[in-house]
Length: 494
Image: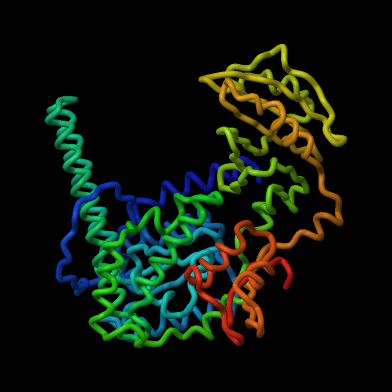
């Protein structure tokens, strides 16, 4: 978990943003009227790469960056076959059946899917874990294929370039006047409205394609609701890299779900179409869930990193978020903890490192040497901007780690929390590292007498077991299980 790797992942995410089709955060309440949507008669697809299309070559060049941002490809032959089958079925009913798409499963726990102009489609294992059948996966992939066939990526690039030029002209001519500000706001609204219409257009194309391929056309609305339920759950338990999630880049609202239902009803009443659930569940069975060994694991209030061989804990009531930038935890009273690693010369003492200028508001007289569970350490205090900080720096096996605890100026809890977190840091034994296993999806068959609560209780390594179990299996409050029903659980026992 070196700091340099976190920075690289963030930089790559920014570099690829301009090429993603549609996919922008919207913060406006402008009502959108549904229009007659039609795909492009001349879509830019993967096949065009051989024709030396510069824009498609540019999209092709972004592929390695996408992989770097989202943890690389996730390799699982049976999962890949299941996803490829869905893509194949959708291609058969495409308005241009000769077009080629390249689907990549990304090794990321974030729930996301997107497309690049060259026919490159991406879906994360996090999204696959949330889906419940092939029809929901088809709805997502068909939506992204709709972006490609409608040339949304290229259209958006053109509009963004026009808005950028208009912004420069307005700024140069009108400066900071109210008229200038109004013009800039109108430009942003135009771009937001354009993005919103692209998403609705991709929904319409996708639902039509999925329904024509024989899948349940109501799956799109159903999965939008599942994603919102999952987002709501994560907002309570703590999210990981929310900026890389589908709902951060695809606008979601009751109106969008209502429109999806309207498109689906063109095929008939709910209950039509194939959900193809058994093959889907067989494909995701055993799939990795959550963080990888390279990122470390969160188990309740403890963070453990098997590759680095270290762990630390936070008090009860805190929620740990293992993100691309750092491991953070938040707790009652606005207290926060941050954990990361830094490379420093082994000949530099930790007290000298603390005093080297990277800590704002450092109280130099507070800097002292300590030993924490046999490891060299330095502890200090700082104050800035109405906050007080505890800085604990630890050297273990040649690597230096930082535990920073922040609390409001008047908080009486800083000392207790910092002491708890700092003293919990330890180097894992070989046996402890070997015992750590990643979480996976396990498909189980409900036995007679089992309830939602009893099956959910069998999950391990996750918080809010009951709530997560319901979301992962699309179970409404009050819903029950039937003997023989297959459901997904999360466990490190498999």
